[in-house]
Length: 134
Image: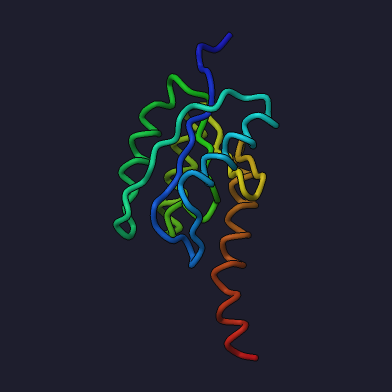
């Protein structure tokens, strides 16, 4: 039986792909997600506002031996760089943890799940290009 308990929330204070929600709203969404999953919600770590800063995400990943996983407010809070995202997936999954995205209702428990999220990211990245052609 595992000693791990709960999911650590991860919220931000900056815009992610042009979308921004107040921190208290992000926490409400994450808390509701955890409740529906039957998981204990551990208070959220708040990322710094600097662009491309993931210091708090790194700190949360250091907790993985003690927690079940991380609940992001949104998958779009992950690094925009594909290699950096892959490193996050690898680190969390290799520790036996999970990544959750509260807004989208996604859970990453395997490499296959991460591949599905990457397809969503690629679609999200190409949509502005497709719309520009119209």
